Length: 416
Image (cartoon, rainbow, N blue to C red):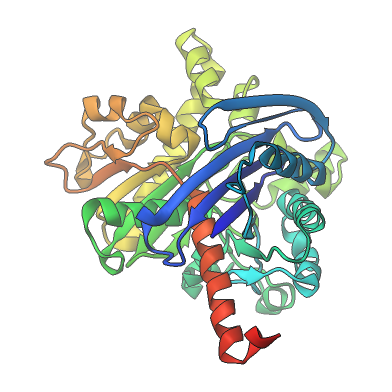
């Protein structure tokens, strides 16, 4: 099946057309036919990507919203198809927040869209754009192309109550569905599953700490292949320091700032989400490479931002080693995790006490490619494993549609 994966971010839309096998676990039977990204949605956007011929293409246009971005991506894919090579048999959508209702991929229909709309208050930054993408894709492709919603929170539904619950009044938690949901589920799952393949270790015997480090950052403690703790919580704001998000702060800070600055809670939340993190501390950029260069030129605030980022990641590794009772490996993924050897080295500095020592040469060489970066003698290893969210979404979509087809045939649904 040719599965179009649409992965909506707050200001981007990543898309891939993947030929995937119904055997969701068969990595060898998935082939990318086309991929691209619509960036800077809401302004002077760009659409870039490549098709079956491998040639890179880039276009620029004003794209006001995610619905228009989806239409542009579909038009771009249609323009390069030859002999039906780029047909779309199904669409998989990444939905960031599944709330307490969605733990498995689900076929999209009007009732599901209503349910997602009701959940949008938990994560309006991502849910509303995803809904616009879904509606635009349904309108463009018609009812003959089935669509599946896959949920980024699903991987963390295995968190035990001790890690999932907040220490707040139970009646409030139950009434409002308040718990630690966790995010970046596809990224963490991608790293864990690939690590198991690389090491020949069964998932059920895999205990690792995964670090998804990019503009958004999170850590996960994975035991027996399942998430048992993660740094993000009710929303993606909790946890590690990020590009523009503060990560962990005193819960009283929002109210304190609102009173002192005579601001609304919504304004303070916007400061914590969009003006904090690396950008807020450095005062100049949310981009790690920019900050590393500024630090080399003597910018003290840029250096402090980088040091805080690495220190907080190292604290979470230590906490999760305690929670897991030890681990097989620490895995780095995401834009920073995959491309910044110096950041990885600083995060792992001083961790010889737990058996982790990086191989300097291997670490420097592992830029955008997978591999072990710890010394052979380490008892806690470190790996770089590039994240592949879209491949997992494609496989989950195929599995969901195949299951639906089997159930329909079993109930006589194929006769209509």
